[in-house]
Image 1 (cartoon, protein in one colour):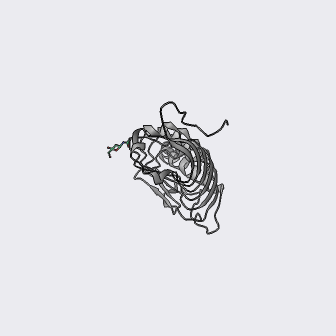
Image 2: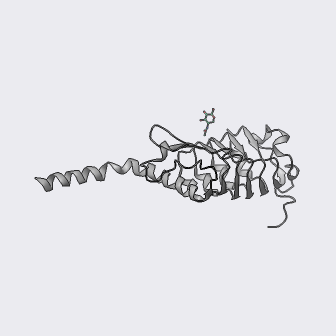
Image 3: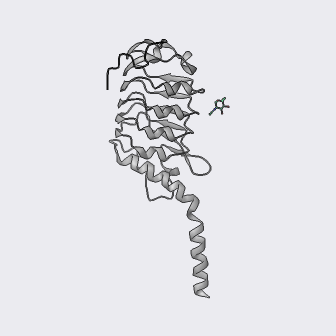
Length: 214
Ligand SMILES: *[C@@H]1O[C@H](CO)[C@@H](O)[C@H](O)[C@H]1NC(C)=O
């Protein structure tokens, strides 16, 4: 009798954790993100990776299925880099990391997060190129990358983002020409100011005109 009971218990245990395992992977991704950061004000103190999911952590929001939908760490005095693990937060809608000291490249893996509505990385120290993979973020409405050290041209893939309504790359080191197609027909000139752009895109001029060979 006793072995029978423990066998059925084992069965239950094996079957139950499956849904929570998938949320744990999001907790693991967030913990990997935390480990790359320096956090002088201990804003990530509540990020305890031993909890079953990250939904009680401060600055993290989940949906009813315990999937992470928001990271709100704007103006948090954090420094460090972003890594590919953020690409595992499949349900993320809002990535709010503005006004910090974050540096390094923007991971191309963010382009896997099909539910992203808002990516706010402005007022940091990001460098390198705007990932082409952002052209796959069909839900994206807000993309604010202004006041960083980004280089290279604006990827033309971004012109496919029909819902993109707020776009700001001002105060970077971007080069080439400014797209005019799709949502780019509506963005104001201020969104592009203080870069190395050669003007609007024109037929016959390469989009990376003036970027040099690299
Ligand atoms: C784009 O916006 C429309 C109108 O708000 C919405 O119905 C649609 O779902 C959005 N598309 C995507 C891919 O998010």
